[in-house]
Image (cartoon, rainbow, N blue to C red; front, top):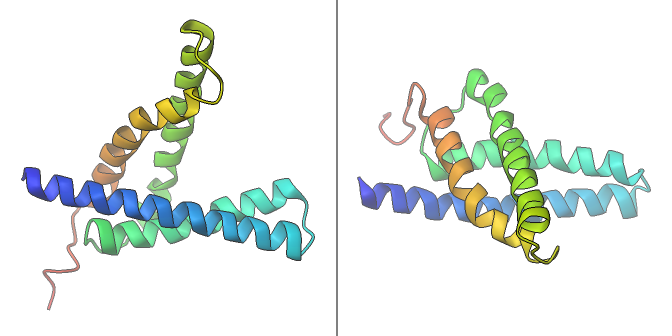
Length: 134
């Protein structure tokens, strides 16, 4: 079981990196090439990268069938991630007096495992393994 968790976590990190690249490319496309306002470009990037992340996590990270229920629950993982990271950055800077450039990086070390656990629960709910179907 530990080996499976480590493998899933590794794949989760890979998906996170790919998702970040996807977001940034979409953002740049709309902001610089299509001349769309930066906030609109940001939200388009978030939405497209979240859809991208959902399917990559479904098939690549967890090997489960995507469902509409999981699809609509999936954004909750990002709400938790943003909330926890924001609180941690505030605590690190205001409470501990850390540098503003270090605090967000430190917060990632806490938020990634939390987001992984929440994402695992959502994606594995009703499992629906893709790999076990013939």
